[in-house]
Amino acid sequence: MPINVVEEFLELVKYNSPSKKEGKIAAYLQKRLQDLGAEVHEDDSSAKTGSDTGNIIALYPGDKAKPTVLLAAHMDTVAQKEGMVPKVRDGVIYSDGSTILGADDKAGIAVILSVLSILKENKNISHGPIEVLFTVQEEVGLVGVKHLDYNLCSQYGYVLDGDGPVGTIVNASPSHITLDIVVEGKAAHAGLAPETGINAIVVAAEAIAAIPSGRLDEETTSNFGLIRGGQGRNIVAERVEVSAEVRSRNKEKLAQETARVIRSFEEAVAKYQAKVNIVKELAYEAFNIDPAHPVIANALRAGEKLGIDVKLHATGGGLDANILNARGITCVALGLGNGNPHSKDEYQEIAELERAVQFILNILTSA
Image (cartoon, rainbow, N blue to C red; front, side, top):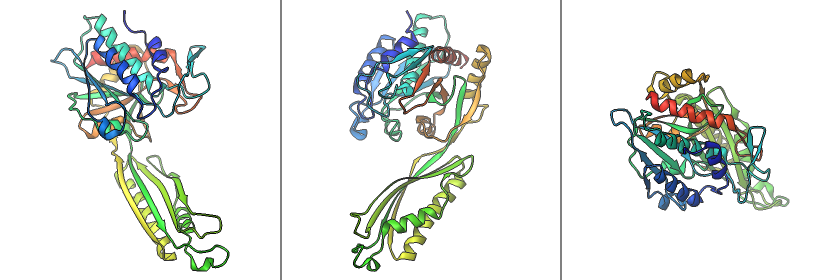
């Protein structure tokens, strides 16, 4: 019998798999994939990622005259959920209210397993080879896929970790630059001789206040997420650390906003005769997939056949798809009908899970 996607999902969300602790669910998935007739591998990335398992890769056989298609999802969740028992109410699956549900991204895994089981049971369904990728540490910076130690052979693929209902295709995502900023001033007694000090917190605050943040336009955002500094209430702060980011789907805007943040801090430290050190890193690169590409065209055909309203969507977040596209495998992300991720109110609609299975099946046969 094919795997029931709802039953599989309910089983998967019971696994506690926070980032770096994906080992138990990885072992379960390896056995599941082997039973489905796939050739299964675990890569050697754990030495670099710090997870208790590597990424899991599997190749499911198909007609080699057709393109090899990648189906990907991530094994980790944003938080611990030990002992969480999922609840079903009115066709919707929730957590027990004590923690997250874990639909992000156990829903994607359940759909992939159900699809493979249907193909195993129905040999008359024509499809090309299917490559499966289950990654670690997606939630903490796409760490697993960045350190993927395996040469994928897929022509294109689908990351089952997108926003919105089934039929939503995330075909555009921003580049993301991280800025780790350290401002160094000069310590002094805040009551006896504050004029002899240079307050690093004040310098940083002035730099931050001088530039806009949040949503800057449809394509671009910036944020100051963490500030750490000072030694005591009565000490002029000698040092402050600021963690910031800039994201944009437009390369020029990304460069302009990043330069504006750096320039603001340089001007503030010059004014107060402080010092600044800024480390800038590209966390991941943007992607924007042409609707005419087969990865989208196949999905549009599948949606039309099933009566699903397929819509293209640009996201402001990062996905494993960003890294896979950078590696040369054209990928989009697909919505699965879950909501309120990363919260105790997270949910998964049962009808959407079932619809996602049919959607992926039809995409694969359209390839």
